[in-house]
Amino acid sequence: MNILVLNAGSSSIKAAVINPISGKRFLELTADNLLDQPTLQFSDGTTTPLSKTGHEHALKVCLTALEEKLSDTKLAGVGHRVVHGGEAFDGPVRITDEVEGQIAALSPLAPLHNPVNLSGIRAARKQFSDLDHFAIFDTAFHQSMPRRAKTYALPKELIEQYGIRRYGFHGTSHQYVAQRAAEYLQNDLRNLRIITCHLGNGCSVAAIEFGRSVETSMGMTPLEGLVMGTRSGDIDPGLFAYLREQSGLSTNEVETMLNRESGLLGLSGKSNDMRTILAAATNGDPDCQLALQVFTHRLRKYIGAYTAVMGGVDAIVFTGGIGENSAVIRHRAVQRMDYLGAVIYEESNTAIQLTEDQPVGEFHVRHSRVSLLVIKTDEQLAIARDCHKLLEKADEVNTLPVIPVAVSARHAHLTRATLDTLYGVGYELTVKKWLSQPGQFAAEETITVVGPRNTIERVRILGPLRSKDQIEVSRTDEFFLGIDAPIRESGKVANTPGCKIIGPAGSVTIKDGLICAWRHIHMTPAEAIQFGVQDRDVVEVAVGSPDRPVIFGNVLIRVSDQYKLEMHIDTDEGNAAEINTGDEGVLTLTGRTGTLRKRRVENRVV
Ligand code: AMP
Image 1 (spheres, protein in one colour):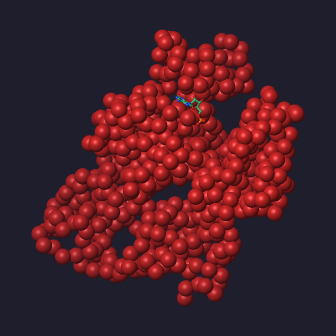
Image 2 (cartoon, helix red, strand yellow):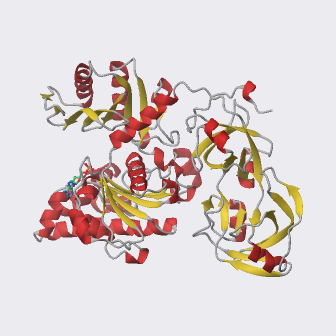
Image 3 (cartoon, helix red, strand yellow):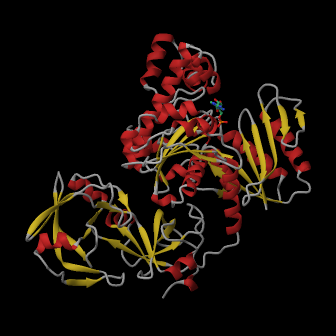
């Protein structure tokens, strides 16, 4: 099976024919300088000068040439890189006329990218009309960012009216290298907190907590964040008014300056290419030295910030043209980070030379708690794999059983030691009500939870006792208590806040354990096979009537032969979506919004 991957940009077109399983490339095509002196280059060594400049003409020539060259190669589908997926897309999608319309509608958010991406899609759908086409969005991976990270502190009405928020970009690359890092570390991505630094012509850094992007440096547009080749990254927005008053520059002119004339190019006055900056800085050029300092200072700042956001870090990954090739940048970014557990091994750092066969290198000392890795990114392969997955799912019909939903009220799981202190040594809980999960019960006993702002009384204890104290509250409860607790799966209480809890016989201040429970589905191993999921996968569930379902993304799968099939949401979620215990959900097939297929009535679990 081969996938044609097409990246139609404004100044260049890139294409590759890839086997998504082996990663083998059969053909690559690059058309550079589309606005200037375009030429078409194939990996088989042939080149074709284009007779005209411009995107449309180049696309036509590229696609015709590809079709000719691929006459003997069977293609299974075409994957298109699309920069902006807005709120609408949180994963790859099969392209239909409706999807084309949605991509077009997102053009105001990415005027330089989405229209040209769309021209590529339209031209390719015409040229390869018998194939399935898929869109893979740069923003999709970051859709999992929590609201606190997505939201700019602007007037609410403006935010809502114009869809202003942080979207993040380079998602395909961040996700790909994070997964490669987990494989290299022989760990599950869902156990790791990783900071990925994609440093190429465009640069961004992402915080990937247990497999999900929770922060990234690019924002509503790819201008925010790190210093880049020609982009400024973070600036004070007051600059717009200041420059207009002082120099008469219009908003458009300032925007062009920030996107095209700033970053390494602006600071150095010489080049947007890090190789040139590094060489000139070494030779004493003060402007290039400053450019280098500003670039790496910003990067260090983000690494520190993202470590704080995740409450620690297990691996820091460098990728992209600069990240993969420059030992100096890597050194400047992570030296003196012993305080967070990252200790660089300089010799490995300078020796790393990534190749196709050796796409990962490490450069930490043996006792470093944090792994420092260099990983070759491969967005084209990631796109081909996403297409392959969707092709495999093409014929599936949702015949899965429906999932009963239960709304969980706030509750506490306690250890023997804590119960001894709160209720007296050797105290046994009294069963008030058996719960749907086998062996679990709500006890007659309750505790009082004390936060810095308020106290919540009568928090029900659930039995049986556990090896760790854990108090599960809703977001509303957190604000009431005055505690900022992370969303966590049950049992993962490391790096969570503690609080004081009181019982009739005494009180305890627990060091950690206060969490906002991650919405989840309990199921047996047999059911997991039926649903095609594994323990700790993250899926999407549609709850309510098939015609007007409420979609819950980010639902964690928990598998054990002790469980009974049931989805648990908290009271806030139940209230917001008007869902009550006893309602039913259905797993959406592709885990994406908009792909819900009507569940079949005959498959209802009675
Ligand atoms: P990318 O967008 O990932 O292809 O990265 C392109 C950028 O990587 C170029 O603009 C260079 O600045 C940078 N780059 C490539 N090779 C090196 C190198 N050996 N040292 C430093 N920077 C490099």
